[in-house]
Length: 448
Image 1 (cartoon, helix red, strand yellow):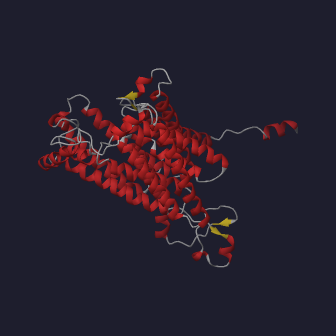
Image 2: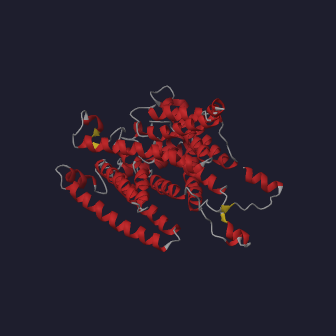
Image 3: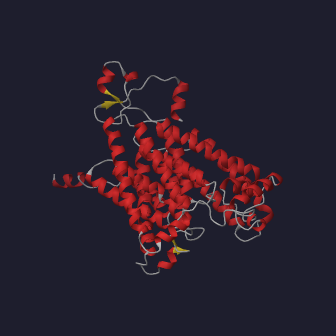
């Protein structure tokens, strides 16, 4: 009998559970590795490729909602592939297009992965992203104040860049984790308030030390949009009061932190230098804004594009406008499909984020981040920012999952026959799922 008991209590290895744990690990690593992009291909390419391999090998569903995304991405990359042909022998042009295909593939991958088991997978991905944000923020702070060996390797022109090639990428990368930290602090639980406040403080300092005007504006705009959306979707007056109170308190704390940092030698001078709306390289006939006008004139004469890195050979620098760059590097096909991709992502992402689901707060943070990135693309090239394509994939996957989400109806409401009038409940306790009889056509739609 003892032997039987020992056998019955033995741990059984479940292949399905093992595969799912491996999937979760790869998602976390994909989110974490997005901060380490010294070169192309980078660590992100390695871990994201491994994650895609694991998911495809173990089964990854492509739903009907993914088809428009797939079509847009293929057309965008196809335009890049046509435009690169005349200059394919030049250094790095073929690699640039290959990376573009890969980043587009990551968007489709995240959209497919997040569409299933959404809440759990999204939390794991965001945990990896947050861990990376904290690590690179600490590196940025320590290197800026020369508190770590090899600090100069993590600086560029006196600005913190941490593990990125450019400070202008470090700052925007930290925006989404900053919003997630705000959301955690808004829970008003002591533990979450302390942890979320600490995360937000470290991230905010790193964003400041990047001295990126775009990142400063990006963080401010995204935070305002995110907090505003949380206020709008909340139906609890007490929760709304807490949001307003926490926003005021947080603004006061960040203001004091900013004043403290600006009082330090060197920080204030560079801050006010960078805080001006225009720099010397922005103005003039061949400045940033002048190149926009000249570039638009050029794209009208080059419907097939001129290929990667060719714009800087005609003008002093790159376009520094992702929408203009899409037309330049991939012709009208890539330019139009890229704009369509951004617009559709914003529209579908907002629809999905406003739907009452357990992952709505995270999706609201992602959408608030993405809309600011889309706006920032008007003054900088964001087409090879890894987190841009990750954000887009999360929005598509979350929106597709939200459209299929089955609302939980309280049992008391169901027994009274008022299921149609009941408010959506995210509580799974003491609730049942009301399922209406479906026709064959309706069942087919639900399956997709």
